[in-house]
Length: 406
Image (cartoon, helix red, strand yellow):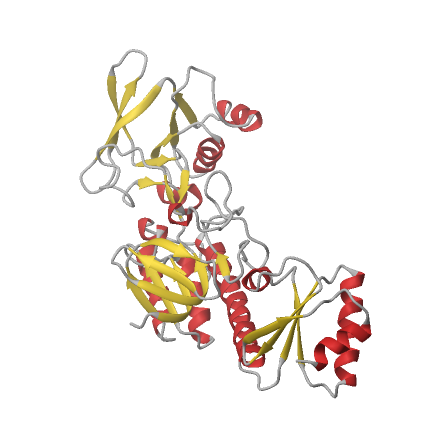
């Protein structure tokens, strides 16, 4: 493994692996960094029946196919944890728990999110064997069985109602007094009137029990302190999801209050060359298929960004002709008129310079790199080295005089 890559993907779940497939196929030197077993959340799902092309496959097996596909395009995988990043320059720096420092031209954040755990006995041991966190993924596997749902927010109640389409009975364990739910009123009314749902109020679960699969739970009444056991074949925990984005604190990447990353249609974050895909981004649906789509979009966008960077290096930094690096604002008439004036002046000088125009609205990091705060601004470069800056607010005669002395 080298220390320099075109594309680094943080996270080896469906989004990250899909992105790596597109990156590898585009002949980008691509690295996937994943702190645990490759595959992410699907590794906790015993059966997946809603991913196109696979009628029925286990989560781990599907992710093995993703990884094999990625490696067929030369993608490298590193088992390590990213603990710190520096996205302030064109070359992004990634630092890991094993003291590696790796650079990339573009980075895709695909570290996903994790269910908030209750950390009770049996939860981790039976995860994927009756303990679940996604009704859309796993509800149908409890056809005709008894299921316990923990939580009272929108996700818990709405997912609980979805589970009733398959389960014989759904017991919802709620911390609050009878009739009090944390979800929206419409969902609460529907759930309270659902014949398949039974609410267990003022309670929490202390333990999930069973040998190889879930067989029962121990429930504690918070008012009386008494405990009782309830037979069931499945336990769905909906006490929240946590995006795995703590390592991005102080990175400059914009996140919402919960730690999710907002992006645009290209999966671009607020930082150039940094993308977010999958469950760690702000989104409506968190499924394998939607994560895969995110990864594909992010990788294609990253590829085009890298192409632009390479073109900049070739056309600007390695140019044999002096370069007028011109920063403009496409929404400002004065800025556009100056660009026209500059081109006319250069023509009069037998095109002594190569003019490279940069829209400050789309190339913020480049403007920051050169310390440009307003448009129009022109940096004069000779073989990539800055030799001067032009006064862009005089007349054409003044502009021509400045260029003639360079």
